[in-house]
Image (tube, rainbow, N blue to C red; front, side):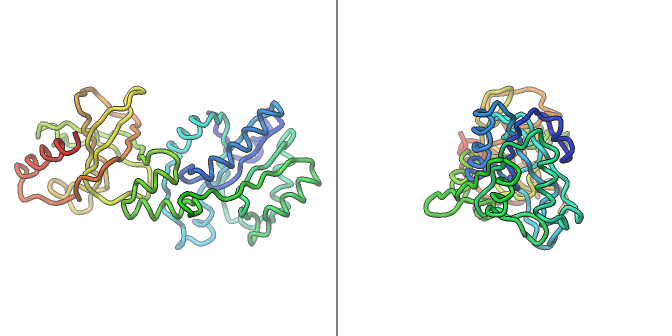
Length: 304
């Protein structure tokens, strides 16, 4: 995937450019519809679909205290976009200067950089520009003036609720991963790089991959039945999400300790995607390592 980092780099993209614009944290069902609209326009007009997002999340600049914890890191977003067939993405820096730019001036810059701008696809309630001065109606006016199409994608509903990143964050934080998966349109998962650990689990007879999740928002700590993608194959396993209170200090960073059934090999440095399934038990501190070992054996049986 080609990752662009400025509006000026859009000049290198073969036109007409079909832009899907938004803050695509989670790439949920609603986001997917916005992106598909741009892909369909690009296919019809032999152009290029580009997913345009912002870094950091605009609220981190506008109202830092209200900024949400992110569901996905950049690596996972890129992986999910590739699965959708996206070949080009623009991660636009969001600064105080960006926030002070009027909606009209922002669109004028986009039009100037694309050769040409074929369409803009957004959620129907999307707003942009200084003081949120731009909306779907002003965007359509700009489209008429500059000759690009505008797709305002209506909200997607699941079980009578409008799909949103906020709703998914609430589901994840409460541990309702079944609901989160329905809203995402895929199994809820965490992605992270396998890091070198103390290999205590190996000494207990259950070798694990120490995955450091990219996501800022995590589900409740505890033991989960999981599926792990290794070399393109999904394998069953068990994982402990948390800070391992029996063997670590109180200020330990959260990690995902993954044990893959009937598999052995070196995963250090790889990025693992881990689908979290059934919740088995909360994370707890045991009186001894032997007690922990006995509980792990019971957990493995439950997960299997």
